[in-house]
Amino acid sequence: MFVPSNYREPDSSWMTDLMRENPLALAVTNGTVEDGPFATHLPVIADPQANDEWAPDLSGARLLGHMNKANPHWGAMETGGIVLLTFTGPNSYVSPTVYEKSPAAPTWDFTSVHVRGVVEKIESSEQTMDVVQSTVRAFEEAKFGTGWDMTDSVGYFHQLLPGVGAFRITVTGAEGMFKLSQEQPAEVRGRVLESFTHSGCPRQRGTADLMRQLP
Image 1 (cartoon, rainbow, N blue to C red):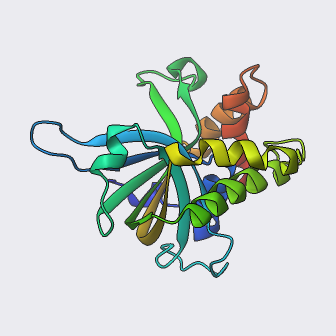
Image 2: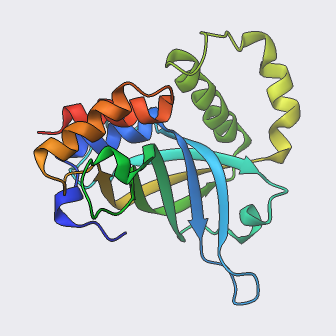
């Protein structure tokens, strides 16, 4: 990902926070010349059995994901292969009317993290179940769920398990782009922030929240 210097994250915690708050990633791997690349949207979590301390570029971090085995992407994925995960955070169109100056050009403020890593397909049914349950637990304990107790549904999980393909990713590096009108003069950026803050669009308000956190 091309990241101009003024759009780089202030520190690595911005990347980890974005990934945890926007866990639906797009997983992309190379395919054949005939098929082209494979891309699948899927939830990704940090491996709860791995070390919580992540390097600034996230290298060495371990992530877990799973997909439907009927998906051709699963068949094309190989242990030892390279995967790109893209996580998208708050973003919004910026109209030149907000700038209150002319000439001007519209743009799109956005936040994104690209994670590269090595895939390990999980063959064990027991470990696959661990991935499924860890995923449920991670989201039910976070702001996404309601604290649902999966105990009564574990048997149902076992019925679904033959169709679930789980995998582990060891991160080799990551880049974050936080394009939040940093290129604009302070007064113009302030008007963008004001516009987003009072918007009825939750995506714009989320973008404003991050803009306020910039140093």
